[in-house]
Length: 587
Ligand code: PEP
Ligand code: MG
Image (cartoon, rainbow, N blue to C red; front, top):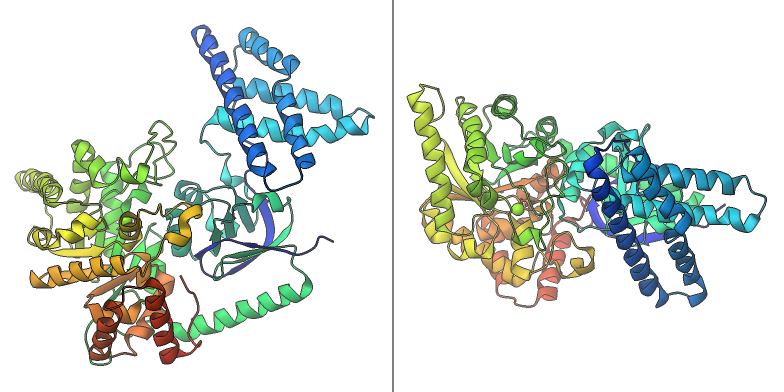
């Protein structure tokens, strides 16, 4: 029996999952056989040599990094791996086969390695046999370089499993059937990376940023994912399993109790309306939104229509998707956000777009304004789906007034085209923007004059204000939702919106953070949009305070400039109101 190991990471999606682990990056990589034209042979050999070089550098970097932490004797394994990588017999055989048989390098390399492993496995030499593991490790590394970012088919997961991967993209996750995945953990990633947000929407417990998770697990290990605390337990003993089973039951009981609030309106005790809406990524999330009592869809991340596929969904496909959502939730409203691609969300295998700083790069509205034809297709689909009157359009990552005016002018062109063609649409459709870049908060007065509503995107607002990559586990301790600078920008935004007579919501993750709710009400927020499962708990908090007391509390918090003091005050206030009762998930 292995000894229980507890690994600490970052909570990404609440809940407990238990089961046999499926190791994504340690297992076989799917390789396709492709024939080459004669003129492609030289390039293919170059590609193989480049991958060898990249792998060599990678192994050396790992060796140096590990040297500082372990007995130098243990790093000899990397010397052995370098020797395998540079094995002249194997490498010249691969090049010879590419020239002779004209197949892709990964296919030929894999076949050559398989032959080598077969002959070693049948040998009686125990030392040689032990080398098989190293050969596999080296070849997996090399093959990942040859394959670029392409991953093996995730749909190979056959039964409900707990997935452990080095990293996962939102595109990877949408490719896995939900009933085959009970939870996941990754070595890389931050708590508000998009894969974490998607996990929340899907209701899948997850932990990210484990750093060394994969290294500590073997195929078939039993693991527990504790998404509330950000902990993964490998080979738990009987007592731990028992405790977690009890915790699972307790969570279920609390969730059921909270669900009884689902049809009550989001309003304070003194009847100030706070709309509690849902963030969704996939069409099927609408059911979750309804189940948990959402008062509308405050954010539909439409780029998920595009993720995990290589081509843009057609106008017709988009129109149908938007129409379906509008109909399913009618008469409640839906905010359709135009594509927010880039950052950590790419369509299909977009390894062709390589940027040094993708979150500061060609993302969201910037890409759409650079590709007006693509943008127009989406806007047309949204307008054509709007006839029922419950759709709104929202632009992401607007940094200033010019961008908003440009986006609106393209929208107006599309409207005119539709009018000319006598196509029915909601001519009074409301237009809003995400406030998620500090420059937008600072320009909120001017922006408010140009649109009908704001939705504050704290996931990005925090990363751009504090200069902390939301997906990087190394700096996740610096990603502080309650940093006074962030609170100040939220305050500026809310005040500017109200001064100009428009409503302002918040759809970043702090909308689901129970410690933030009273503060946000007191700051004057009109709407909170969150992953569906968090809705009942947030409703409960909203319904338990008066606007007057929330305002007093917010004034007190906003006077403090020390982050730790702010956090302490928020926690104390929460505990004073609810004790530990009612806390299901702390985001
Ligand atoms: C945000 O930035 O807070 C937001 C809601 O948008 P996304 O998480 O999709 O970037
Ligand atoms: Mg954002």
